[in-house]
Image (cartoon, rainbow over all chains, first blue to last red; front, side, top):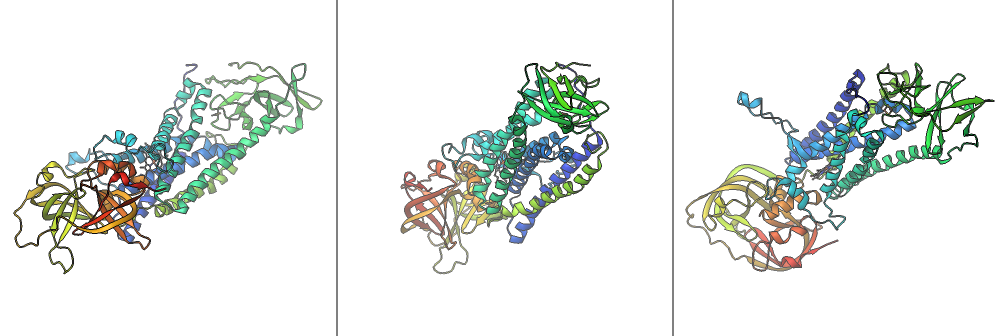
Length: 365
Length: 248
Ligand code: HEM
Ligand code: FES
């Protein structure tokens, strides 16, 4: 381990964040199940409560996954979304929990009610999950049944959509389990980042889970439209934000024979902020403080956040994603933190900014 | 400064943004929570009646365990008996404690599920009773209604009769396979464009159940050509399961 990690710091704002998240999810679940009951009563048929709960939790997880995956690109396009990004990992963990409950269901524990000679109250949301409800109470173990019932692996429309859900849940589990900074530190940021890119594999599997499951049974054009809209939305914002970066990376600047790179007029860099330049293989954030210039790697050591979209506070660049700080001159985090990013020699000649290669290695304060 | 740092006071622009964005997101959740349930196929017919007692002749076939119940005030021309399909607790056929009384008159207790013409009772115990006197002879041989080509879906009679909603279709495939392989009577659910439904138990050429031979065809569109035989109120479709055809 390169350094001791600091336990997740609960700030008031994180608590508010989690509170709003929980309120939104609870509202959805309660309304979904409440309306299902009401609708069944109006149609004068009994509701299958386990099935309704399975659908409520599954769809809640699926909807929240869309929001979670939207925040990254939206924050790229508009910094106001940083207010949702800083604690995005709790949203991801919530997606996993909802997916897990969709599969596992939940019941209140017998105790302490049994000590009082009573039964645990049957809240409307006490239910069997998709695994048990559809696979238990038969002639096979539920897990064996899950993997063996439907053997139509060669048929697209009949494909066992549950197995795509298993892939989705497994990916969400790995994300949630490694979401803590403890793992980030121990796995190193690039490995951690690679693991977290797997969320897109998970998302693809879950789109398949819904297309080959719910949309086959419930042939409502509205339901299909909603699922499709979610997919198109995510693709669109990822493409738009990705395209912007691609434009920057697309024309990397080359050093001249002396190893210096011309970055253009100093006026192009707003005072107190940075402009990001793509050098061959590397993005560099050049900050201007009045007439002073500082060049740092654009890549935050925490989760590769874009330092060039950060601001300078007390001589430190503050990462826009989760607030890690790096000294402008050295690229080192102020003690007790030990992260540091490479810096570059930079100068201004006749109103034009020039940066020197190679970078100075990261140096701890 | 209008730059967000999560451990510092919220800048004005961000406060304004959250002021409309969070209510918008909550509103989206509320709208979806109210809307999405209505897009689900989960309000079908099929209901559970309170625990009931039934007395009748216990039979193992056609198409699985069933009990032949005399109809009290029958009208002329109607069958004298009703057949009610039987399942055990869970995705099984009734346990040995029930099936050992096959061919005898018994009293059964359990919950009764019914969906249109289809009725299934969940039972785990049978109490033998003396055969009631003065009953018309039951039609144990059945009456052939001739050959038919039918298109429908193979379902498990228990879930479809009301345990689950919709209890059919792709999302229910795994569960239906569990039920049918466990010995719950397999039923061919047919409906014509006029919306009339027909549920037929499936039997092979020798009149045996087909359960283990149709698992690959459960919960999808299937065409079957065979002989329809009426046993009191119960229809059976007699055909070699090897001739069942998947559509599409
Ligand atoms: C072991 C993993 C999983 C299994 C076995 C599983 C199983 C199922 C089943 C059987 C259904 C159909 C329920 C019904 O309509 O009767 C379903 C629906 C669904 N599942 Fe999963 N699932 C799994 C994981 C997930 C995960 C991780 C998510 C989302 C994050 C998810 C999202 C959904 C959604 C959105 C639906 C459609 C609900 C609706 O009809 O509105 N599932 N799943
Ligand atoms: S990426 Fe998390 S603080 Fe920079």
